[in-house]
Length: 219
Image (cartoon, rainbow, N blue to C red):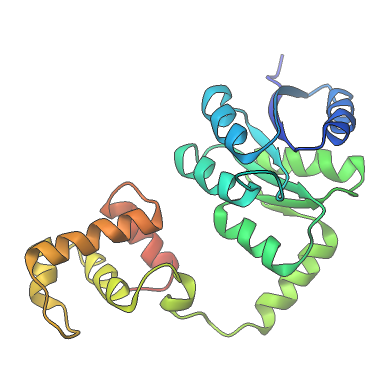
């Protein structure tokens, strides 16, 4: 027998969870393994339950769904987060994407669309509602190529420079010696910059930071 897709639902409206639970239980290949009411619970339950999919609202008391998604994807990148929310503005959609969500549906989506999204994300895809998908295509078609500063807004100009040096697999001393922007930096300052970069990018080591840098177009 094929293992069921294990799902965690996170939404602060009990009535919505009731309806969603009934929908999911009607599908023989899906199993609801837990429910949460806010982002903090989502992070805790994701860690303990390790579901395949999390259906996550955005606007909730305390920690919101985007921040919760970012933390969950950082600690458990194999979990697929699908935002299921009432918010369809561009800021919400792209914030969710940057946080690591692999799907984005509106709460008015049809049952078939929700079920197909769950199965599609489990299969390795990224699923967005048809209307949102069209807007995303238009957004990226009209958008100029992003600079590293645009792609990594959390980093300062100096930190982007240090990250570029990191991509060449330099030691902290070599980074201190080669940093171009005035003022010159010491070994201790270089070490602090590297530590800050890893923290801001929410990555565990230099190798992961280099991957993020490549994705942002830094070479």
